[in-house]
Amino acid sequence: MGRVTCTTPSPEKVLSCPQIPGPVTATLVPHGPVYPSFAFRFDTDYGSVTFSGDTRLSENLDRLAAGTDTLVHKAINVEGSGLPPAFVAHNLESHVEVQEVGKIAQKAGATRLVLSHLGDHTGVIDEAKWKAWAQDGYDGEVIVGRDLQRLVLATR
Image 1 (cartoon, rainbow, N blue to C red):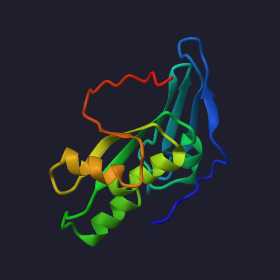
Image 2: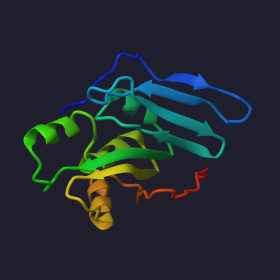
Image 3: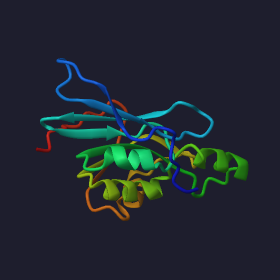
């Protein structure tokens, strides 16, 4: 599966208000048969964070995440799942494998990569293995996210 460009020409500012300390930018991302699906970026005086949303490889996400401090990215693993090929193909048309996410973060220049909304079709998420997979091709910090986990954004 290659990179997909959605129909929006570039990320667009979608919100700016006093309660949020900086602009919020969004772009369409491909999520298989589900439309629309969005990625969001929040820029503040303390740093920036980009959320991939549910997506497969996407030039729109690449543009949105460029220069972000923290990239929070959805990731799945189908390796060793033994699932039917049609189920694997469906998942790969809608999501990015954990083995590819580090390259996205590296290209963006993200200081930190947080794996989120995890889907491991072997039934178990081995944090050490997931971290090693995501670290391949990425020089920054990798965090395997957990439900209700809190992270400090301040990177500047």
